[in-house]
Length: 387
Image (cartoon, rainbow, N blue to C red):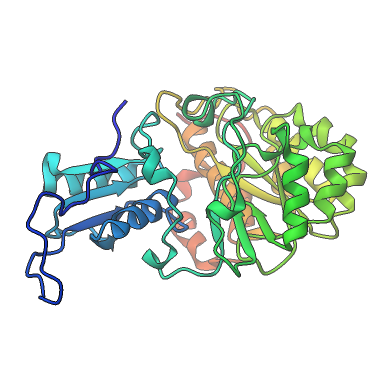
């Protein structure tokens, strides 16, 4: 297993050099490390720990998000996502530094880990000038083996020991964003929920919670936690519904979900992986009936797992889907409809005009003119192939 290079924990960077005479200014140059944030949308936890480690050893630390050469003794980077945009940035950095650049993160190598002495560091939030919330893990791993997820390969299916809030939450910080893969599946989660409530934290469960693990006891404890959205501006708790069988889990717990309040439950749903339109529709209808806030998330392929959208994806009346509306998060629903629009054309060779009219009825109205100007690419007949 390869790890990011760091000095030996017992060896100071200046050890072995002539020590400066007290009271006399040393002219020895400070060592510098440049940290590249490839694609994080929140402060990168690994980079903040690396920053804390090197600063504690007297190094100068610089954070870069742009692709530009920087003179330094060490160049490190982190990529969270395995996607084309991130790979292009990594290739550009490698062209600048060659083997002189070390990159880790889920987007590069699932086996690579921070050295233990770095992982144990308290995050350096000053690296990002960030003070809106703390970010970190209490637990790792997940007992599920979802094919679209990197967690089984990266963290394994067995939960490891829970961490401590004191390992990443600054004194006086109330807002906490948790990155745990499946917190409710952890055997000791009840004690962690009690601790959240006791400390008065506002908590964002950014990776969602597992509805199948929501028991009456855990539900009562969650009601005592100030669950928040990612901006910490309103109360909201997050669950996920990625497979049709999960619908039953939500229906069975609908009374518990209702107690989180109106618009208090957001459900993240993956699409474009291995479900048919009718299976997706069943999930969307459940969200409507239970009045849950939807968040539709397109599948981003992970290494070795391409999208598995079946050839018979369009297996129901598309007009029924087009007529659906959601009381909240309408823009996110439009994102799904745009994916549906592209998929329909890729499958049948033309765009479905009623779907286009729905897409551009309220937002970006003029965009439909580019389609209307080319009637040969349009159709109002459902499921007629022009390929």
